[in-house]
Image (cartoon, rainbow, N blue to C red; front, side, top):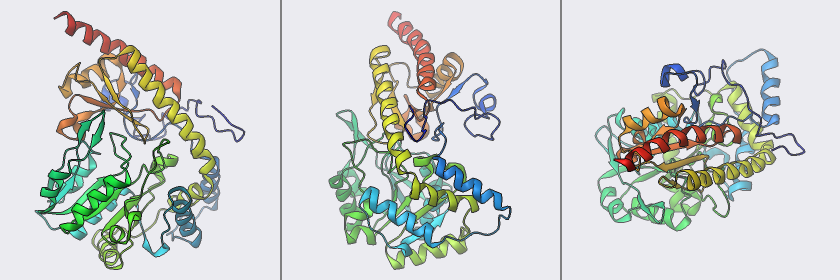
Length: 401
């Protein structure tokens, strides 16, 4: 699909030989170069041409020294958040980092001690578990419930858990479920956490990839008390496919929280230098990338709808949790097996596809798969056809038993 600006999301790019985590480890990870990878959350689309041009221009300079954030950087980020999300922030609230996960780790180091409880809501992006456990903190799991085919929050359990926790990692929009939390849902989370002194760290990296009529609400935008007791983590990496540029930002409105957070990030963890190309890519994407993003959202929605229709027609025994945001579909494959090893065998050996196996997102994800549909539609449909053929053999064999 191309428009007058030349955004062709149908074009299949060859990413092999580009040091791609997604395409250059197929033999190592899955045992075959013939596997189609729709697992790790980067897209198979070129970044906006303005971003490419800006990075090429920087590369041509030839001196890649220590880099600072300029006025243009701050104007681009603050302008983007106000235009796209109706959230007016101050430039001094912005703290840079090489990624959202390092920012989560910095928050854990800053606001908790070894042995403290940190709340997450499973199934959830698996580095949440890593940054908690690897730093000697305790995972406090507030499992999401499935109601009417979507994830819902267990507020009663959260109320009890917040009494003994110090921090909550909130995934908004949610990965892998694709939920866009409403303002009322977020308010209830905030009311509970703040009542018990729990700071909320909101990972909002997918905030731009929301499908109408849903609308992302930045947690800290709900009111002064929410801004004062929270940290919001964003990046252009998912929106514009810039993960390799290592550029993210944390928004910390409260001065005292920000002072402590900066001290840990800069001195304790030595996260204090910006990426030469990351600063350029971030500014260019937030300044010029809006037309490209609008076309991308149309294409991703069409991909999502094609995936949902495919499962309904070809594999009705499997249920898709229709994502309200992200380019990730959460699919219930328990009719085939709840054994992660069996689903891996089905994918990698029988179907020759690589989706994300669900148990890595938490125990309740066993029997589920996460499919990245941020790719040309021909690639998506080929992967689904491969999977359907292998899955149908499994389902038919079970019915015959």
